[in-house]
Image 1 (cartoon, rainbow, N blue to C red):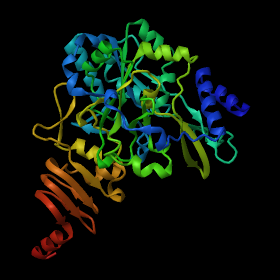
Image 2 (image 1 turned 120 degrees about the horizontal axis):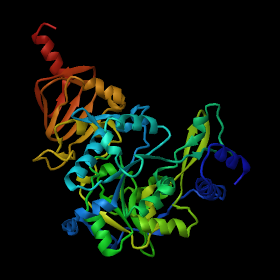
Image 3 (image 1 turned 90 degrees about the vertical axis):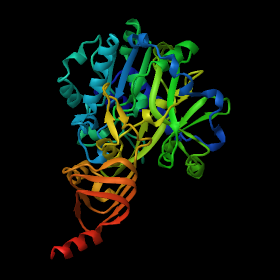
Image 4 (image 1 turned 180 degrees about the horizontal axis):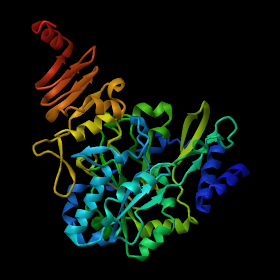
Length: 464
């Protein structure tokens, strides 16, 4: 690696393992590798690599809670929704945010089981301070052998024109988070310390996926069958066609392919949800001893399939070198994919998913788990016009007076600038259209509704 990278990374205080990991990926980029996985290298996963959750759910073993660490990936700012602080600070249900709900889930689990379930957050340099400050409201949470947080590392951005470090007067713009695949390196000394305290399994999931709750039948299955790594997967729907999919190589080793790793000519097959049927929920279970052995065997490095992410920063084209946590499924022998229901995958990546959680389609149970309301079989599919609802402040403004009832709603599509008041009920498939701003309340909505005509009729009856 060229001297400028080493100098800048050492100045930043990054550990030797981080610098060496970056170096391996940088050399791949310099050699022309783009991290692509072509269609002729892979095939859909075979039955022997897929485990049906229904076949193992009876294995639940509460005693394993004392050997399990819960790790939440909490590095995201939710910039796509216009946020500048940790996304996990967003109110999501009953005036509770993601951090409230995760904290109460773990505290309830500790109370019910009697085991001091370990909770860790992997924060980025953008989210660490806000997260720890907020968690001070739960002093019992930190009554554990380890700090609540460890920091994700950072990589230098690379100029596309000459493959030198991208430099900027605003120094933070020179760096990018290296993707959640960094977790294995970021754990650092924590890994050995957890193993020394008899922690055996790590359950890792995104902080914004409140469906990801501890289920001891999964580590029990791993323990009984000597399985080092389990990825929870769901059946893909049309909405998931651009997300990463599960596959395997010609030798039968499971792989994860993200869309950034797909050659352009293979995109139609990539998006064929009947061919590649499963996507990664990013709920991952890891045998910590197997991980430690893997790290030792590779001199402290966990080298994963590279994702080269082209970006433009302040007008300069750069490359970001990233990896995905789930791609470690290709590193461990005898890794498996566990097919779970959508109940374990309730992410908030966009405002439409947040609206679903705000609504009465979901509720919090006594264990502070987000579940579909009794009688609701599937969450409503929501499409919101980006112009009016894409940013969180726009969403909050238009639903500040009320959230529509969606427990009887299958689909909700809003075209136009519609704000909601109290007692709006949506049933079945609902499409709302408005060419000018409109406020609605006290109504039952079904089918396709032209709000312009309703408002104009109302004005005619009242004399304008």
